[in-house]
Structures are given as C-alpha cells and as structure tokens.
Image (cartoon, rainbow over all chains, first blue to last red; front, side, top):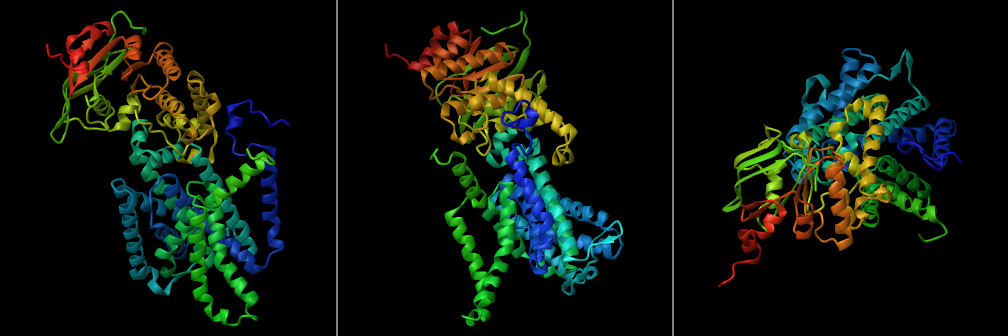
Length: 345
Length: 263
C-alpha cells in the first residue's frame, strides 16, 4: 500500500488521495461514459438538465455557502449568460468557443458591479439588494426590443470545430464535461488562498481583515466568480433549450438554486452537486410516480400540477428540519460510521 | 530576556492618541514607543483602554486624533488589511478563529499576502499555485511545530479546547510572518501548565523568530518575568512606563491596582 503514508506536502494536498477514492472516481467516470447507451432520451434529458444545474449551483455555493454573501439574484446572472449567448451567436454569428466564455465574462462583470454596493450591505439588506437587481434584469428582458421580450429568442445548436451537437447523447457528453470541469475548478479555488479568504470572510470578517485579507477584493471576486458560473450555466442552457424566454429566469429560478445549495449542503462542493441532482429530479420523480399509479387513482392525473409544487415544498421543508447540514452532512455521517465500523467510535 | 540590540530602533511609535466612545475617553493623549526586538507589555485594570489601543493600532477603530507610526510610516487611517500587510499581526483576546476551517487552514489563511497567484492559476491548480501552496505549507509546518499543534493539524477549530484555540490564534498571527505581534491576554482562563507553555512560546517567538511582541496581560507573574518594558494604563491614560522591577515599586501603579489607603 504505497499511499498509506504521505511523504511530501504535495501528496498531502492532492485532490484525490487514496487508492479507493481513485477507484470509485474511475467507476463513476466509466459509468458516465457508458450510461447514454442504456438510458432513454427522456432520462438523458434529465441528466442534461442536472449538469447545467450543477454548474449554477456550484457558483451560488461559492457566494452564499463559502463567502457568506446572500444573493437572490442568481437567476438574473443565468439570464445574462443565456441572452449573451443568444445575442452574440444570432446577431454576430460568433462561434460557441467564443460565445460561451463571453457569456461567463459578461455575467461576471455585471456580478462584480453588483458586488460593489454589496460591500456595504449584509444579510437581509444584501438579499434585498440582489433581489432588486433580479427585478431590473427581468424588466429589461421583457422590454428590450432587440431580444424580442415575451416572444423569446431562438438559439443555434452548439457546434465545436465544425461538429454540431444534435442528439441528447452528444449533449450529455458535452454538458457533463462542463459540469465536471466546473466541479474541479471550484474544488481547486476552495483549496487555494482564494477559498480560504472566502471562508475567512464568512466566519469572521474583522479577523480576516486583521490577518491582511482585503475584504473588498474578495467579496467582489466572489460575486464575479459566482456570476461567471451562472453565466456559463445560462449559455449552455440557451444552446440546449434552443429557445429562451424571459419568464424562465424570474425569481423562482434564483430560489430554486438557493434550495439546491441549502438542501445539498452550504459550503460544500459535494452539496452543490447533490442538491442540483435532487432538486432537478424531484419534479420528474413526481411525474413518474403519478404515472405509475394513474390507473388505480385516476384523480391524481388532474392534480399533478398542484401536487408537484406541494410535494416539492414538503421535501425541502422536511429536509431542512431533519438534516440542516444537507445531503453532504448525511454523506459525512455515513462515511464516519463506516470508517470505524463495527465500533461506535 | 529578549535579544535587544545595543541601540535599538523604534518600531512602533504612538503619540497623542485619543479615542472616545460617546462621552467615554477610552484612550486619551497616549504616547508610547515600542523598540525593535523587545517584549513590551501593557497592563492596567479592566476598562483601562488596552484592547482599544490594540484595535486602534490594527485599524479596526479609527482614532480621533494623534499618530501611530510603524517603522516611521504613519498608519493611522489605513485600512486594517494594509496595516496587517506591513507586518503587524494580531492575536485576539476573545478567540476570533475561522470556525469553519481546520487548524491547518486557519494557519494558512493569514498568508494570503505572501502568496502571489491569480484566480485562473488557482482554478486549475497548476504550476505557480501548486508550488507556492507547497512552500506555504512548509512554512506553516514550522509554526505548527513551534506551537506543538501537530496532532490537531486536521481538526476543525471548533472541536478544540479553549487553551489549544488560544494557541492556534497565536499561530495564525505568526504565520503572517509579521515584524510585531500584538498579543491580547494569551493566558486568560488558562491553568498553570498551559500558562507556562504559553510563556515559553512567547519567548521562542521573540528570541528565535526575532519578532517584537506587544503583550496585554493580567497575569502579573507572566508580565514581570517576560517583559523588557511595561506600560501601565488607567482610564485611558498612561500612568507609568519602565522596566518590570521599577513598575512593581511605582506608587502610582500600586494605587491604581490596589486603591488608596485612607491613612
């Protein structure tokens, strides 16, 4: 067992340390690669939605979970990314490799601008400030002629180097790759001086300043990085849906993202991913279950819309009541239990 | 006793410092000089303005009048993080550690200004970032060794006892590689053994790492044994300053601490 003892700080700081972790990750990666051959179009579609949600949730968790800055405007940054992609590809005909980074950068710039007044706001006041920004963006989307307001905008398919991504399966590989890359990047950011500064600001901002950490720089940076993630998620969403309307980027989108990170676990990378998976799949799960029992209880079919909202809310409330640390907290406990099994501690 | 050069330079010079909260003068017309390499203690009854003085030096409070010079440079009015980056570290009285982090991350967190890589390099964890993090870790390990924190390295600070947390608090100030460290009541609430350990650490910091120490402490034995010079504050005023043995005999100091006798 060559990996039992670390002999250098580099080994101790490595992302994937033990053989077991590497083996499990290998199995996970392999199953991602082969799963499109076993899943239906519908199921792949859910996975694609999840990949996009993972990217957005990672970004929001960097801001709320790690830096402690509450934002109710995350949906607005997703919208900015989506519309930047739509505009630059439709009107200027720019290729995907340019429009996607541009969407991220555009959202990041606006995020940093929102971050500047946020330097003076905390807690609920910051929540209100970002909420106001969300409303402004929504208003612009509905009233700006160039993007056709309520009519929506058509977006071209993703094409990389002449290869156009058409099928669900191609989308799956492309979107999953982005989600994996986003996860690795945020993990790296968190273990760097930037991540430590974020957490320091969240935990004790006065002490952080006395330790030489410039608050303004890192708060603005947190807003920027978080919005960059949202912008990328928005750009991918626009391409994937092929059609975007302003109504899909309202307050409820921001709240959905908050639900993901709270349910998954604030201040954990794993939590962002698990939360995105759960929140995206719950509605599909409800539809699936009602489909199964619709012959026995035909009345359920007509109630499905109300049920969806109700059950969704119920799951979130129960999860918060029984597991305030989110899914990542459950994972941590289970891991701890098996580490010492069969002994209690 | 600390290593003091024959003709030491002034490291920190405070003059005419005044700070008030509403009608209360927390610090008034205060003047003091800390020399390079010494252990300088500030004592005084509760509410004498000692911690307020530290907060003024670190820039957390903005003093109303006066001047604070560090290596000849005026630092009054500078933001706290810039003051810290000049080399003034702070160990807080009420533990102000980052509770969501392990001991190791707490100690690494205060080296932000010593690491020079950008967001892009951090996100990919390539070359520059990875190399610098490794070197940073190497230096942090020295502090961990100095303060005997090896077995707590990967423990979250919230799970540690009070005495250990105080030690981490001191460690986090040291990993900044400061020129002077402001230590606020390092042994309050500690037992005799922990106090002796802390005294040893403070001497090590001063003698081996050549860091100037400014100490606020109520434990008189610690102050008298460690300090090169002592200043006594009462109601925001400096009522005495000098070598420990002089301070112990000063009638003004005895009056402030024990009260005046009637006869």
